[in-house]
Image (cartoon, rainbow, N blue to C red; front, side):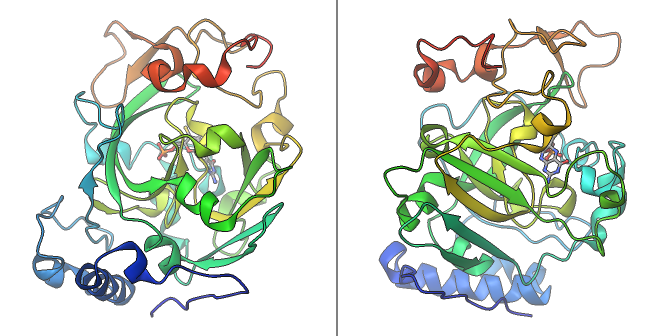
Length: 331
Ligand code: MTE
């Protein structure tokens, strides 16, 4: 089924304003095919560009094309984590708390039709159908490390575009200092919601300058393909210099505010999970060190752990956002 286009009271870009007409038509064609699940056969002809992924994955995934990002720091040369590792070892508590649960249970997530509501302190609030979001800006592939607070990390080729493109479109008011991200909370399709482990919906937040930083990605895919459900389909956040939990999955609402958002993990355990949650080897989690990490799929239990880098290695790009701040206090 094709996703409906929501046009609630604000100007959506005419796609020809963003991409050349021919490319736009091809993208529309692709969206239609994705919606009908018939994408596999048509991939070769779509866009006439080199496909990032040649293999059709199990679980009705279809390739999503993108160009390699030119943003400094957006592509790491590190070995990319195996697809099977990045898609079977997940945190997505809406589908269970075990790392294997999301891959097993997230098949029930209904990703179409999908709408993201943008509200709060913005000039142009409204609802974006996924289709509108996908065509808001050309997609890029960005190979980022994702470091979990639990001490593991992975290197993933994410597909998406900077969140700033969406923020600019909705025109935040001068007083808006923070952005809140609310994710899907549907009891009918998400068995984990029966547990009180978190106060649902899962909410995350960023300061406005963090949200506008070019490394902050609104992501629709990984490994050149549409996001698998367990990794946050159909649209998620990727904030590579913060612990993984800041990268909220299956976004349904983005709200602008003048107050620091109350985030799900902060509400669950304020002494363990602060608002900033920057990857910082010098500030330990109260129950374990954050100085080292294990790369998923590569480092075994007996391998020497890797040193964790400040801001997950993105210090040259983001360090200045926190100049003068006490990062022990603002953990
Ligand atoms: N988003 C939602 N909605 N629910 C969650 O439980 N877990 C977070 C984050 N986003 C989570 C979420 C945590 S703890 C991590 S480490 C990352 O997703 C993991 O993303 P990945 O499974 O793609 O590696």
